[in-house]
Length: 356
Ligand SMILES: Nc1ncnc2c1ncn2[C@@H]1O[C@H](COP(=O)(O)OP(=O)(O)OP(=O)(O)O)[C@@H](O)[C@H]1O
Ligand SMILES: [Mg+2]
Image 1 (cartoon, rainbow, N blue to C red):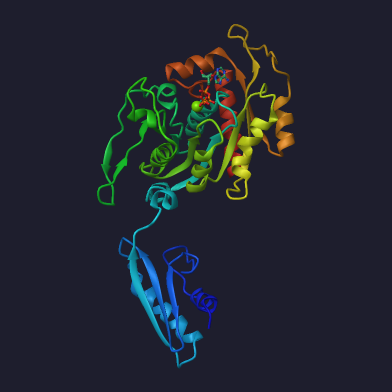
Image 2 (cartoon, rainbow, N blue to C red):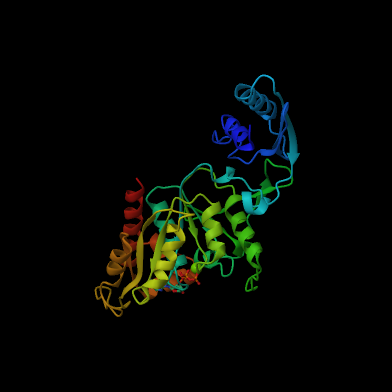
């Protein structure tokens, strides 16, 4: 009888409250002692009392008895352990309760900064809300949050209420334009530089998502910070994002940048679908000549890029002064009926159609 045999036997014991995974897979088998006449195992339980402790101890013992010769004694002990890496393993010890009623969690990402990710995220959120969906947006850009300005909610202070877990408050999102907004910007003084070291940034932005009382939503969009570093990978791993929308501009000559964004989601540890590419600033339309289109950066850069990456081109957004101005004014164009606003409604329609 080897350790491996014992583990094999214990794999028959499933935890009904943890997606029915087995106790070996859940890492609960802490210790195995084998001697000629006795097998003794120790199961580890997390700090909070697991109501299924006795059930699992009993089931583990039964499994051992089934597989061992009757001459061998069996013993199953339970110990309570501190989670050794709570922040990493369980995202700050924050559970997924607050996003349990969200149907689609979608990351809005890019390989490069400044391509209009936040503009697209904010307008897409407004457009989906106009179509009647329940929408939330989490601004995960801990370094340069722009959602407060773009939605005219700067200076607002989100309320908090006691959560179910002791000592942990839930943050209430702000509601405006029919969308629930959350941003780290609401917790910083205006103009104050947000300087975070890697792990802190990581935790802060998980809090912006997991400690917020979103309630039932059809879409939760996550405006990802620029870049494709560790923070991103960790975010994509810890938040059950369904997939991503990648924003690019036609002058992103280097396909490599966009590829980096795409690969954040496609790498083997993450493996989430890319719902499509949004080509922002696809052409320029002067304010005074709304019917004119100037393809300053070439006409089908976005389409070509989408083809090369094997993803859909979900939408094309023109470069117009109004988009920038309305962003600065906190009144997203997608709320209006001008052509630039309509481009976002079309994009929202495409995405909603794609996600069924
Ligand atoms: N289609 C557009 N037409 C006009 N201005 C635009 C358009 N898209 C974005 N902008 C402007 O470009 C600037 C950068 O956009 P935005 O902040 O959305 O980019 P970002 O990718 O989120 O940047 P960051 O990487 O810093 O987060 C903003 O001033 C915004 O108003
Ligand atoms: Mg941004």
